[in-house]
Image (cartoon, rainbow, N blue to C red; front, side):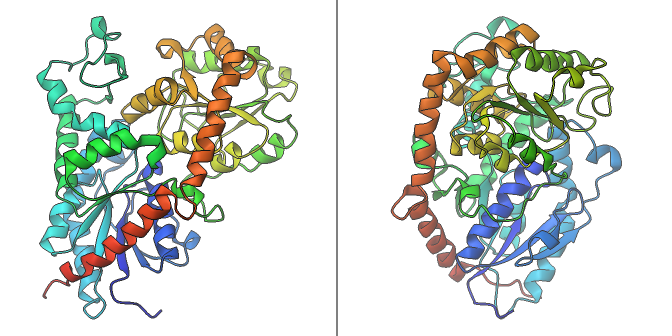
Length: 460
């Protein structure tokens, strides 16, 4: 393939589902603008290169043990990745650069949580642009962590959960992004290092749009002092691109939805990481059944403590639904949310899920689990008001049934649906010529090309 100087990019996604998808969507966007894409990835959770014939893929051994790779302690996993990937990534990048002497790579685009890549890029005098796969509003909260630590908000005390965080509009103490980990101090260390490396980068790409997060983007522009490019929503640039899912999507979700009335179905999915206890699983099941609304429920294998899949359901549960419920191991989520039958999304509020729901005008029932999900849920329910949060995150069948009925049948639900529809229109108009994301993408392309004069291959 003939290469054009100044248009070769190296992309390096974090190997988690919610991070791989937006990085590959970004790759497609930049490829459509004439860039040639090389993707470096770990052996752990590696994407399928055959789904992306226009890109070149290079993998390296990440050195993760089986125990480290299968942990539910995400901060510990990120710590291991940022330590063990340094040398093999550097060697992989050096190999690529050494054979690209006449047509050098213009820059590295890496996930913001791969903070070590800034030092590696600097060692090759290769500009690094950061992709933030989460929202700008949650990142603005992360940048406030040093102040919050100074003000003794951490560790969070049960007696302060309902207390307002004066330094952060809209948030209560219970909404502060935390993660379950054996080493809480490592979580704070990870955030501090990530923010520092982001400030040292040549720019930041956001999968968001100005009408959604303008205040946070304005604040971050002042705080970070690097160019920001809000070019989202990524997945709406080309609906025909391949799925980056690491799990097999059950297409029966769509054929079942085809049999349901418009805007009647509650779609339930808590993402690729969150897990539930047996008691929570059963409350969810009975809450959905008792709501008398059709539902499509994603239950990942081994996501329920002590069960491989559905064996904890009471005998006859599915049969007694009379076809009103459909349970799958994984669903083609973008296609599901765009389906005319879907009327609500019960979600963990990962950023991809939140943005995909906004883009289809689907109201949300929020059940955040950890990290930025908590902030996203606050913005969905209290700022954009296109959904509401389960009270205290309570998983009790009566509470679940009541919230579903409120969203699907009550006047409050109609008002939420109206606001969601208007926000959907804004999410689409920003991509049209003259729209904010359209213009930001033009600026990003120009910015990347301007970096060419600063990048050159390392001398052997």
